[in-house]
Length: 130
Image (cartoon, rainbow, N blue to C red):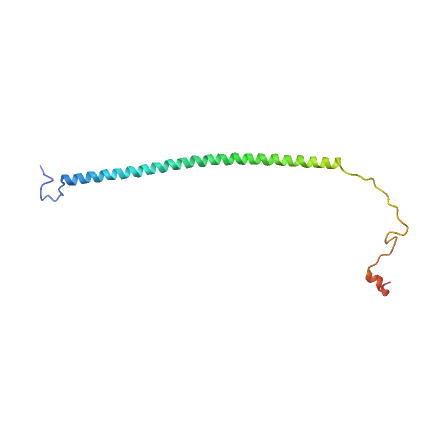
């Protein structure tokens, strides 16, 4: 049988100190990786919560949009009713005056073509234009 740890074999001889060191290094690496995994788990949980919050916000926005559309439709209907009521009140309280014939003073005759000749000032002052 071949002794692997025999001197001069060319293989590194492991002592108890080396084995203990390797074991401690492996434990430290396991602890480090467990910390990394815990951090990643926390990140995944936070992202899941964020996704749930965004989905809830999306639902809120769609409900808000529907409520806004309903409110706008109701406001338009109320505006239309208000205008109808204003028109009705204005018609009920309108002041109407029957048409009247104004007597024309004989000195106040209507202008041309059947009354007073109305010309511009330039034409009136220009004797050659007459």
